[in-house]
Length: 131
Image (cartoon, rainbow, N blue to C red; front, top):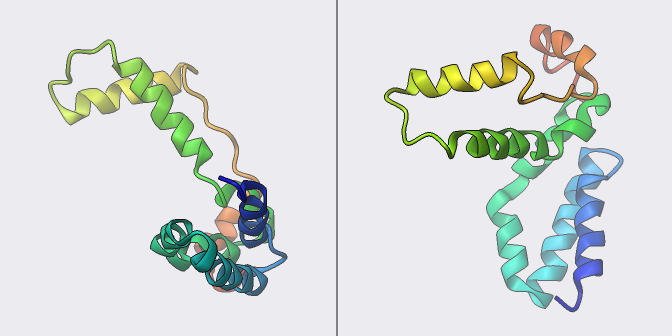
């Protein structure tokens, strides 16, 4: 794409904004600008909708972990890699048992969520801790 760097910069303005309001303004500006320049890209972002901005409702310490799905994608990729050798699983429980075993024995590792210390306070009072 001829405008790849500019598009990347405008997208990063959405997900690296100082707060949710600034993120929403960057989102609206992105849609307005790229609807003219590259309608397919703008439509794709509109399909995601403002759910893309949900992480702004959490404490700022958690934003880094919540703004991306990379940890989940890594888990899925590794689980698929490990299960490719299996013909099939007889039950859903068999697949879950394999996943548990891979995690329990360190074959698949989870990364700590940034700001994880805020999770217990979110459970007690989600609105009080929104950033």
